[in-house]
Length: 267
Image 1 (spheres, rainbow, N blue to C red):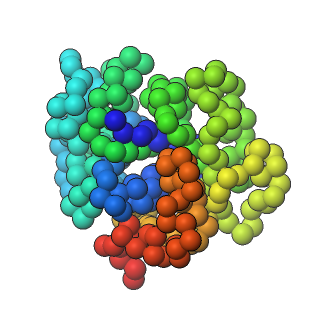
Image 2: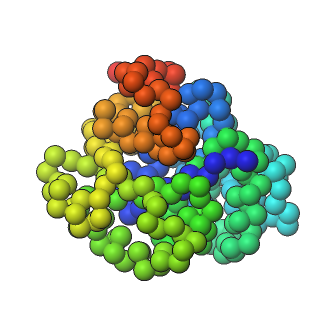
Image 3: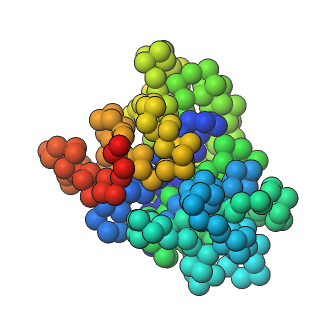
């Protein structure tokens, strides 16, 4: 069974970029990862792979609305990256809308996550910022590790304050979430925001190269442009998943992530 990593946070905090970097990091040793986005408001298949035309038959919506959900049905809808064959993707397809499929139900989401976790070593859930999308709270409940990515500004702070009351039940393990400062910039009042938000476990600094990759549809090339603080946040997550110190601890970060960075365009 896969380890389930759920990533949630306020809009525009860099969640999807982080999920792509994390997938490359976790599959550097040829383990398998599956990134799942169930946000129908922003279909992710054409964002992840703008150069490939994927029909709606590849959509996660066809799985969640099917009569039967099992590993065979899910595996048939997984799209594998050509350059990174150990990373699979599931999301909504181009042209789909929030009204393309029936509303998601808790039991079907849990069954879907259970069956999907049988296919890979890591299940990375890239969640909608909208808690009314039932996939997000269900994914947080099912997670082995939950990461909340919050921009270190008033938008992030007030998003967190608005959604904390929705996650107070013990099943969400709110106090155990890893909190990362997304798109952190030099002008952010990091110390003040760290105090108000309750402490950041790591930073995901903004870089224009990262933004360029996102706008050009090259999300899986971002890792090659991440600075040391971003890399440290990825290493922290890997440590949490392994239950102990990073096995690569003591090696230079560039050596630890050489395999994950292979294939990146560094120009």
